[in-house]
Image (cartoon, rainbow over all chains, first blue to last red; front, top):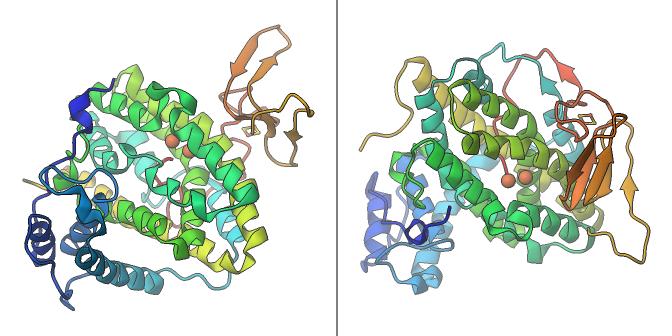
Length: 332
Length: 77
Ligand code: FES
Ligand SMILES: [Fe+2]
Ligand SMILES: [Fe+2]
């Protein structure tokens, strides 16, 4: 259920280093940082949080930060420098040659029957996840799911014809198909309530490790840049294609630990919805985009592969912690 | 992709996968049981393996004992 306070802008997150501290200070009135230290790791906590904070100006903003700073030219310049670092690292780490968008998505559609290497979060949670681990998982995923499908809406004006119609149809479904209580972000808030988590937007940012921030920053990066529309579409397709089977495993995990119906519902809805979304995204959005702009094929591949790459980094972080019976959340 | 009244309802077929039908859709099984979906587009299972039958749940996919990395970790949208 929607309570008004849940949708208030969040507090600024706690800094994790000089960059995120400088961005925080800039939002409170100091001049923004001029240059990015060479040794700040592209996927590290400090850079990812600085970027995350600047992106949030385009979503909900922050308490005590003027809304107009969204288009402050000095902050935008700072954001561009951070994005450049992130994107350059991804381009280096994510190969896109020797394949096509179709082949890259086909690969994701071969369904594993088991997880012999133990690299899959959803297999792990289904088979041995504890209630606490599922709560941690939901807390970290809330950074995205409480704004589910918002980053992807930015691509709509950059698409045309079949791709646009397909994208809008899927987004309509994500946004509840005209029913506010069916908005997927609301279903996720219901899941969080069920798991006794705090549903206020942005509440768990401080608890999220860099690997979790990076998966959300990727969507914002692709969504906000028209030049990356192919990558956004590839990212969206990769998520829709892999969602259904993973959602089933998470629904089973939640049932096994005795979570309530609202928690299970979020994932069972995604088993069914994303089986449809996958079809529409592949047949209309990806195929439609590449029909009108075939030169974007490699960008679609980049979006697919960058998504997998960052999700694998997050999975390694989560499973690394949980296998040692440690928390995957950052401490206060 | 709401079905306009002035044109036939479109069903998309493919060899390995569900029928895609513009919603809302009602499916009646051999026992007369009715299942309804009002999604904008509905994927009706043709492989009979779905655990959400009559709706597709991607169980039609090729399955593999695999090694290598997880392809299922994308969140959901
Ligand atoms: S056609 Fe998809 S599960 Fe049967
Ligand atoms: Fe979806
Ligand atoms: Fe969704």
